[in-house]
Length: 333
Ligand SMILES: Cc1cc2nc3c(=O)[nH]c(=O)nc-3n(C[C@H](O)[C@H](O)[C@H](O)COP(=O)(O)O)c2cc1C
Figure (cartoon, helix red, strand yellow):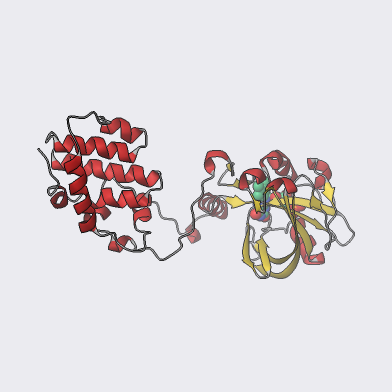
């Protein structure tokens, strides 16, 4: 582990460090206007949402690292309070990069970066027509975090109006794959919120039993990962091992080892079929050809496969049966 005290390092180093670890960051394409009505457009990834009632976002145009001068977006928002934030889709990313160039005050980056203006309903600055998601915002508070080169300016703003393209919706819900947004990482890295980068994780519906309640032979497993243990620890109550043991005794007794079974545990495991893998394993166990340590490990592999399939109940059965003393009670030979 490398440890860094920000006070002992130059600001550009701290900036790179911060941006690598606070990632991915959403990108706000901010459109603002000066008091003469000149439009400005610049991307900012010091940006997020901070509450829904009222809807509040914060964007931070920092003082320029080179000379500590304020950015045009900051000056415009300070002067007129109003701005728009357009979300950035993958199709827009090269253009927003161009818009981030250090153009002279008064230069319209919509023109420079080839974006199209779309009129706002409430605020004066337009939104970006190419964006699937545009917010009209009004400044509530400004907080200067230091006034030095690289210091931030938290522009805390209320969202007065949302505009979302029809194409972003799947029925009543916005589908992230339809938005296809990009985010900023450290150095020159971006990421795209689509394809394999996206996954769904349902919110916990109750307080799970927690890691501390997992039996130690499961918690200390070198087969099950932290994520898999978290799935097991999310159940509302510990399943009853005795009931499972009694059922398994009957099931194992009923296995006819003379009959053909899915006979290769490893193949079934790789195929992601927890039930077939278990059947192959128990048939082998019954013939007495496997030692307890191997079966214990393989049962935990079955639990891992069941968890990948989303079958937490079956995963718990396999995990609880991987206790050697419990396993020893199953019929064999
Ligand atoms: C993806 C991206 C994210 C950026 N995020 C920020 C940011 O959060 N804060 C900032 O001060 N500058 C950020 N920049 C740099 C500004 O966009 C750049 O300084 C721009 O020229 C400011 O324009 P302005 O002076 O017209 O406001 C970012 C640039 C890019 C490409």
